[in-house]
Image (cartoon, rainbow, N blue to C red; front, side):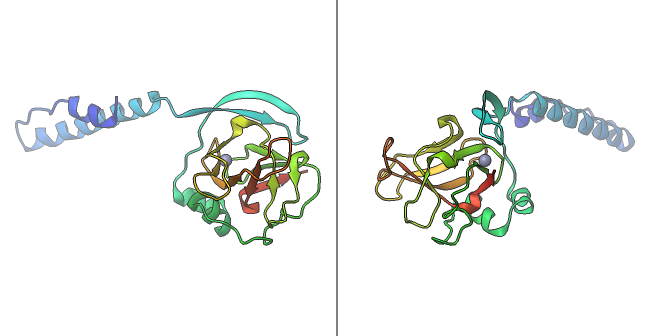
Length: 192
Ligand SMILES: [Zn+2]
């Protein structure tokens, strides 16, 4: 039931006089507020299944978790200007400008917005494009993507848990998948 339904079914209090009316309105507002709060608490939040990983890359298993949903204002307070633009407004960082395109350390790349593990250094490769590139995600459950293509149309890669824009998926990657996840550095947080 939506909050709007609750508002409709709460009956209007009868009004007998000015003083009675003010008391009734106060009580009615309280009832409405309590009903809305109850519906808010009982409404199931959107949930997703993701696979959790420890910082040293160990697979901890699949879990059902609520999606991370925040307002633009909350994201702006949490993220740098560039990370906000890329992850929440589907921007693209300049090639060869990010922190990770030329990184060869062993570790894990998490979502800058919600910390979900996204890629492992084990499947990172030098694509020559100036963006960190991977031939598969750390777990299929953790990323969402469109159809891989030779262009960037309909091939957006996003974080499953928070819908952050991460980059694009292309079909010109190396074996064994033939895929290239072309990801913006500022959408990622590297963990050694
Ligand atoms: Zn995320």
